Each structure stands twice: as C-alpha cells, then as structure tokens.
Image (cartoon, rainbow over all chains, first blue to last red; front, side):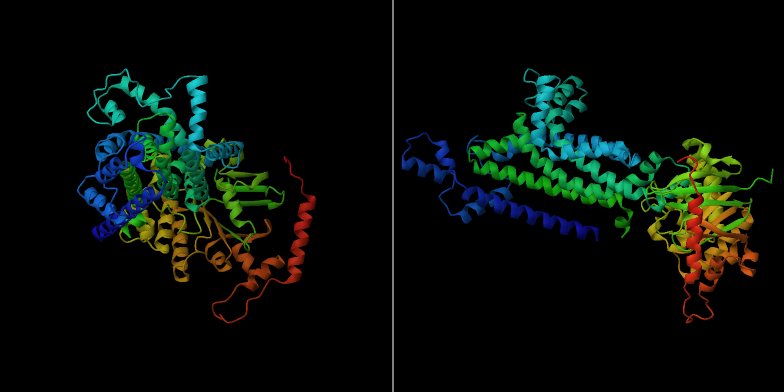
Length: 335
Length: 294
C-alpha cells in the first residue's frame, strides 16, 4: 500500500520534471537571442557561425536537439555551458549548496519570526497587540522580497553597517571546507569565526526572503489557532487549569500547524524562486545569481540545467510537506 | 462548615458588547453533592452560567455584576492564575459534544491524566492507576487499549465515557455538565445519563446540569432552575416543580415536551400569551436594572 503510493508519487514527479524540461527547452529556443552570436566577435564569417552551430548541435531540428539533450541528461550529462565552457552539472552542483543554505536559513528565519507572532497574536486576540501584529504582517506581505533587500541594505548596510551586503563570504578568509555547504560545515567543524562571517553575509538576503513568508505564516497560523481556541477541547483544557499559553502550545499548535504547513510548502517554493533576484541583489554566489548570468548570455544548456534543478527542488519540497503532514496527522497515518 | 454551599451565584449579570444582557441577575445555590438542573430553550443562557463559573465565557461576553462563590471563595476576587488553579482543582466540565471535546492529535491517556499530573502534581503512576479505575467505573472494557487510542478511533459514546471519567478523575466538588447527552444517540443517551447519576452518587459530587430536556431533569436532579432569556423564572425542588409548576412558562415547557408513548402527537409550541408575559417580565427586569460597575 505504502509502496504503491510511493511509486505513484515518483511517477508523477518524473512526469512533472519531463513537462518542465519540455517547456524550458522550447521556450528558451523560441525566445529571441542567439547564443552563437553572443560568443563570436563582430565580423565573424558565416562559415564560423555555421561551424559553431554544428558544434553545439544547434543546426538540428528542435525535436532532435531535445532528445539528444534528454538522452544526455538520462546518463547524467547535462551538456557544456556555452558561456563558461564547463560541464553544466558540476557548475550547478557547485552553486546549489549556497542557494540551499540561503533558502533553508530564510525558511527557519520565517518560522522563527512567524510562529511566535502567531502564538502571541492568538493569545492576545481582540486586543491592540493583535491589531499591531496584523498591521506588521500587512506591511511585510505587501513589500516583495527584493524590495525588502534594498530596504535592508539601506538600513543595515549603509545607515547602521552591521551586516555584510555583498557576497557569500569575505574573500580574505581561508576556507578549509571540503564541500560547498559552507555554513553547515563551519558549524560541523566548530569554526565559529567562519560561521559568524557566513551568517553576516547571509543575514540580510535571508531576512529579505523570510519577511513575506513570516507574515504569511503568522497570519495563517494565528487564524487557525484562534479557530481552535474556540473549540471544545481548548475550553476543556482551560477548565482543567491550563493557562492560555499552555493551551496554545499543548493543544492548539500542533493541530493549527497542519493547514499552515501546506501553505509553507507552497510558499517555500516561491522563496526558492525569490533567491534568483535576491542573490543578484546581494551578489551572493548561488544558483540564482548564475541563472541570471546564464539568461543574459543565452547559455541554453546552463539555463536548462538550472531550471531542471529548481524544478526538482520544488517537487522534493512538496514531497517533504506531504510526508510531514502524514506524520503530524494521526488520522492520515492510520487511515 | 457543611453549611457553606458548593456553589453560590448571586445577582449575576453579563452583557454582550451591544450592552444587551445575556444573563439577567441570576442567583442560584448548589449544596454539596446536589444535582441542580438548569433548563430552558436554546439561547436562554443555560450554558452561559456554567461557562461563567468555569471562567470560559466567550471573549465577547462580559460579567458586569454579581458574585460567584465556589465553596465560599469569591471567584471574582482571585487573580487569573489563582482562579485557574482553583477551577482546575475543584471543578470539571462534561462537555456537550464528545466529538469535538477531545484533541484529535493526542492519545486518550494523556488527555485524561494531564490535569492530574501537570496541574495537581500527581505522579504518573498514581494518575494512571486512578484512570484505569475510573475507565473501569465508566464501563470501558479494555482501558489499556483505549488510553493508547486517538479520539477518532472511538465511538461517540465511548468518547463521552472517557470525558466523564476525566471529569471525575480529580474528585472535583463541582461538575458542570453542559448538555452531556444532547449530541448522542438516543440509546446511548440513557446509558450515559445513568452513568453520570451513578458516579455522582458514589463520589458525592455536586453537578450543575445544563439541559433542555425536562425528562432528564426529572431523572437526575434534586433542584431545578428554569431559565428564560437569561433570567431565572422559577427555582424549585424537582419533585415540587413537576408536581406543581408555578410559572406559566414552566407549565408551557412541560406541555411542550414530546411523549415517547405518543410519538405522533403534534408538538405544542409555547403559548403566545405566556411569551408575551415573559417579554413583560424581561422588560420589567431591565427597567429596574442599573449595572453597579459599568
């Protein structure tokens, strides 16, 4: 039963990824801009252009190109970047950890801000405190992440310069890392000096990404909590002698988390999408920053590789949400 | 010392934000070990009184006047924390709908023992043996299995038994039973009612029994207060009330009760003249009433 569901799930994941691959492949070839023209100096002969087109397989039909590329992907060969002249897969894998660290850190920040605000707002429901939280949520939500990025640069980079505004790590530092997961490794190796530097770089882009999500989490969770706090089992818990905070933490939070979790999953994929612009803004050397360069250079294989990795991330996040949902909800687990 | 009533409510008034009173100068006394029924139609404020005592009124309802004494302790004079502790130790609630009164994501066992362990400071083993015994008393056959279940794995009747066991677990002096049989099947209703009556006798617990069912009142209570629009229109010993109801509304309610012996008889609505009289009484009460501290 479980195995069947898992297999069905894997199949739909593959179909989704295939669909994404088709769309991206077609769209970037239909869109204006010629990668070959970008590579050659002005005044290159038609012969040169033709030779390069043949080299990159761009002289074949779209369908042929697609299946050649897909066959490569199936073997783990994502092609060679036109602009960087390196293997696409290793380029992407090199940058992916930076983006993952940023996105996860931003997600944790969003939860660290949103959940306590929701609990506070639910406990103080109907008071000025709740109204204040609503206003803050509205503000955080109505400003998009990249604009938050600019605001934060102005505040904590220029006016009160406490955080780094550019890059992922200070270039003067010696990095002893074996992988690209700098932050995880710095914690693992107890190199707190490096961790501090990494966090100082990551703080503002992560906060910019986290603020809109924090507002969504706090608003939705607060609403769910308020509904649950009117239910009989919350009333019963109060009669038992538990304080309002205890009722929220012991009885309401877990049940209120279910609807919030679904939304956080969806919103987290948006957050990953948001890294593209925010990474650019902070010159953070992640996948998103590379994606923009790839688009500017019409680097078709690289764009395809990056988009496919992003799509894979989205699919995996959704899978993780479903699994967590089943773990939290005993009715789903046994049913 | 035994003279002190278990619960004494005097002159209790509560209002909605609009200023309308939902409780109109309610007074009632419950002796230790006594079952006091509150009857009235929907919206008469029966449940409000129970909730006011337990301190779980909806946030929109505000108590504007009156006193509630639990075993001589004035509830309104306590700090929220002290009040919570007292309510948790001395009272319990048997809720109306067993389907929503248990947390769906927690197992049954901890939901019954949490008050004993977390609020009253019992050891886990003492709490568990007490719960085993009580689950036995409420005729749950496999207590060991039931405590490990999630609520959705039990029937409505089973859940209400669990909630009753939980209510009696800490030997409270007062239980508020808020229409505990309304949400149940008719056949299960009788069993549950018998169960509450039996446990009440054995444990000597006073019960504020909220119901709209006069049949239930006759079976379980020693005293009755009849409510209309948040106002006690008649208070009497149960036997006296059924023998000779004084207020026309009480008489009308009794006449309106459907008889199982003649299920096809048409239901009688409360007479228009009686309702007009009641409206007059409510208006009269409101004219005379000024909140002491508004």
